[in-house]
Image 1: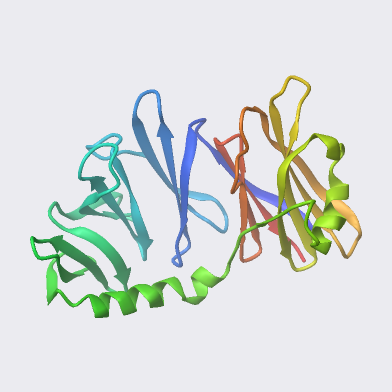
Image 2 (image 1 turned 60 degrees about the horizontal axis):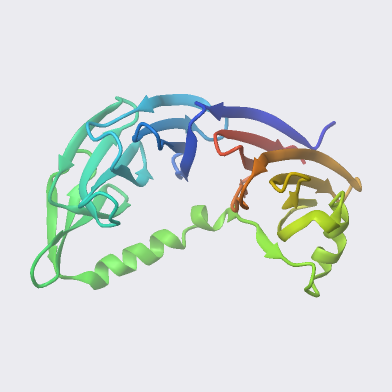
Amino acid sequence: MAAIKKIYSFTNKKDIWRLVLSPSGYLVIEERDLTSKEVFFNCLTFHDGKVMLKNFQLDEKYWIGIEAVHDNFIFFHKFKKPDMPNHKGVYAFDILNQKIIWQHEDFVFQLAEGNSVYVFQPTFEGRNYFSLNIASGEVIRNLESNYEEINKLRINSMNNDFQKSFLFPQQISAAGNDMAAEDFFTAIDDPNNLVGSLNFLEYNNFNLISYHAKNKNGTLNNYFKVFDSKKQKWILKEIINTNISKMIPDSFFVKDNLLFLLVEKTRLVVYKFLV
């Protein structure tokens, strides 16, 4: 039996800008068309790829992004000014009913926890914090300038079991003393054409690597491979980006027993490790 199996893929042939997974089992995919200046949002159940939402757009077609995905809600934000990082507004989208159920133009999202959404309102003196009912957007508490409570909630949300279960690759260099680097640089067909470092991740008895190699025309190909150390063989080999002008980092990660692999910046392929 194969040790790895493709379970689904997703593409709309647009650049995938961001992936957001949630404890409630959702994967929200943000796609951007840089030519038409439009952003599209898609939602799948991340364990099996069931489509819950496809090509959703808000009234603002481009200057909008995802704050968080919590329970059955996606929280969006607009920007205070185009091309500037400051967020503005909170827009709560109900995934099951597929509509915006409440919004606050003057608040800025901080975090969602339990049945509450924590936001702030900028003031001349700083920030006033509020907790809102997640389903209605109604103000539950005025926390005024109590940043300590917000900070504790934020730290807890970043250190929960769900966040800790993600596995991301690390960079290793041929010039270093890392034994993993010494072993897995042999996986490269032509090491002389290697550009940059290897991205390396160890998951159970599997070793995952991604690297870039120079083509004869001066462009780069980005390779991805999975080695089964128990069976002592390569079980997956893919070229995930072809004829690119610069290196593309962060092309894969592992969550639970699932491998999320971004191909040509426009296609997400999800594999399942079977042992």
